Amino acid sequence: MKTFFSVVATLVVVAAAALLGHTVWDHYMAQPWTRDGRVRADIINVAPDVSGVVVAVPVHDNQLVKKGDVLMRIDPDHYQAAVAQAKALVASRKATWQMREVNAKRRADMDSLVVSRESREDAGNTANAAQADYQQAQAELAAAELNLSRTQVLATTDGYVTNLNVHPGDYAKVGEAKMAVVDRHSFWVYGYFEESKLPRVHVGDPARLEMMSGDVLRGHVESISRGIYDRDNPESRELVADVNPTFNWVRLAQRVPVRIHLDAVPQGTVLAAGTTCTVVIEPDHA
Image (cartoon, rainbow, N blue to C red):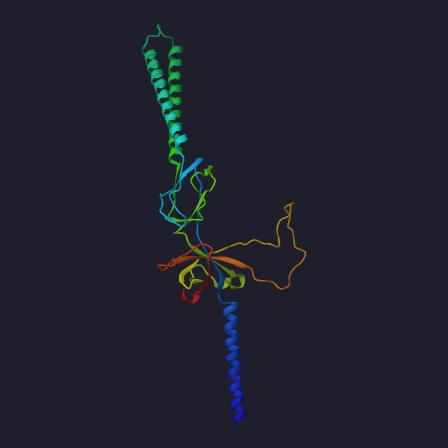
């Protein structure tokens, strides 16, 4: 009898160990979770639309700014002069057009015995050309006023100024990024899942995000990437496949990005693009 109970106890222990081993194996090898999660956000590279010397930077590093806030000011003197010059040109072209138009109307009212038909047509064409010149001057004035307004570089979204490295006295060039702003409304998480776990990941599945700071966030699967770079099959200079002559028999599962939308961020939680977290998909609760 004692031997029987020993055998039964041994079998129970073996069964429990097997069940525990299977559970652990299933959790680590098949369940959709990964430690390789990265917080991401849209980062706006702020570049001026006009060139000039930076005269003021009314923000500081890591400051929260609102859409429309002034991020930096460029010396407006040249652009104010350009506006004044464009206004003078508009006035000149307008006076010329009005004079040509009056002359054209005067000739049109004269008798054909006094003014020839050709002269009347020439006067009308000259007035039309003067009107076109006036309209061109108005367009140049509008462009000059637009350039003047662009000397104030404004925030295009709510966000955080990061890694500020522009100072009064720096020279700003058109299209050259001088500042970065992290869009505060754009945070999401990329979870890099092994391809063997993708069959258990579906769009809409709820996700638990365990931050390294200890905070736990909730989200759901927004989308699954449909392509990653094939490092073993680049193109040659002749645009044909450059096949690697060696192959590792131990194949590692590729990691595929899965985009996680954040449903809510607890108050007091500080999110920073580039931080890491553990992503756990919970399909059973979908």
